[in-house]
Length: 499
Image (tube, rainbow, N blue to C red; front, side, top):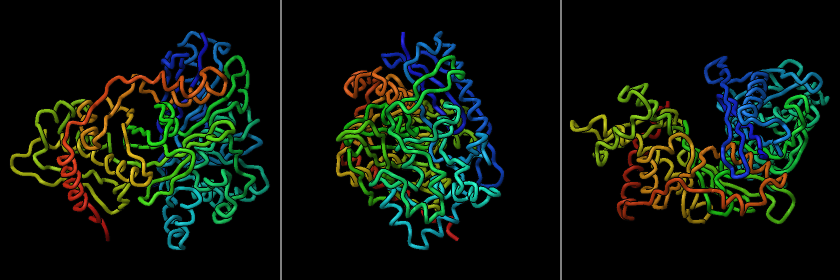
């Protein structure tokens, strides 16, 4: 038996999964690590702990599979995106904690860039809106605030990377400083059109090129691991950011194919083909993945996100205490046939795509004396599906490609009632795959394709199997009316916290 090892380095835990040739999960190991909150709005990780947990779970997953290093044809990496790290090239030690994608310390810098009129040009080059979410202003902050960092970076003594680069550095004993195009495209420093770091943006944020990693294809052998780590050298052959990896793992290879990951929030990506599509609806344009040289080397995606998905159910449980566990929400919501015209707009942290209103706040409208816990639970599930429908409406307008079906993954995709709602509000089938570990699977596929373990996209597409398909039941007029009523509720939530 031969296998591929996928390293899935997430925001709260490091995981490793072993896949066989049929793309079945052979073994899994997972370990959480600390979340560090030095100040309100700041979120950090200890990168040494990330590496230690990732290495240990890799060894554990291999042991659980009953296989030594000789059984593995490749290693693939997928990672939390945008988290920013700076380390010493000589010692391999971080000069500070990693600044996590959730961290908001550079929001004032982003406000300043927008006031200077920089946002439109940055979006044209990078496909990204100016936001503290992305790595560029985080790296600028580290260079400005870690004593001596800027001078050392300019001298070539420091290395910047997102978490994929940090793992590659450690896996190769510091021999390789690299990232892939999908992760590079999340930095606000990478030009989608030239496929290279952008000198104008580097100058704008005063970032020396000497600190940056090489940008390599998402699928391709980039290095061998140090043999001491696993007992023998393994080819590092696949890298992609977590949401792009999940899209690849869902076999969304044709333009118009799309996936939604239902986690704390929702992350939606649509394949738009070989050319980047500029968004008119404040979606993000991003590199999906990049293969070896060829006419379709790079696949681009449109991306939108919903801040509150599973977190809305957590609020019902922890904030209102109307349920005891998240699993209860489906059975409680199913006790009523509709919400009784009650709408929950879960704008607890503002609204994301397509409204982008940081002053919006959570709103529950339409209640009467007859409103029950069940109506509120159903309104919470509807809110997740309705927010996602808003994003996909924006995507189809931008891409001018109709959505034909939606492939789903993530914890909340196991909620059958929610998936039926999603099909109803989109008006297209929602399809849940048999293998829901799509993020790690995408990394495995990218690595396995580069090493001949899998033959190509056709084989991957044939291995993708549906576990359940949810067909829309709402009539078109009813669907349109529902979405319009939802938009009325959203309008009532907007601007509530504005000074």
